[in-house]
Figure 1: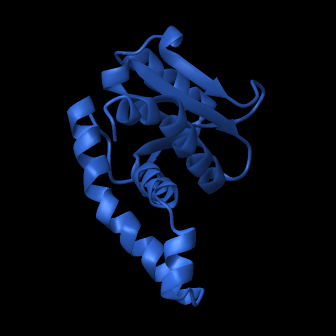
Figure 2: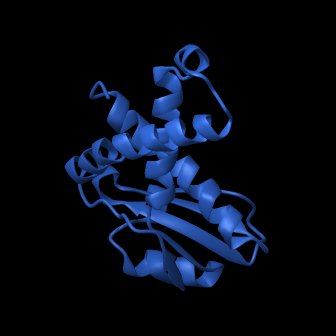
Length: 145
């Protein structure tokens, strides 16, 4: 099993704090990307909406999440040893695939897991976006973020 990523929130408060912290990073990323695309001030003001900044913030946050990568049997063993039950797992992908990537979210009593055959990086990114969309977005946006 391999672990990738830099952030594994244990609590909703930890997740919210980190989400707030990546906001300025997202703004810089968008600003620098628009400079590279030669946006002038008027085009920037017209095209860079709060939704664009929020989308960048969501992506930056999600891509930092810790994920575990391994064979499907390693996921099954991890799950058996964890505090989570099979009913806590949201599964994405096919059943007859050799590998899995997963992200536990303790404060939501949820594990998001995805299967993959050959592309662990793509699977990890897909899993992170799904974790954000299925759990974190609701947690953040219900608090008015």
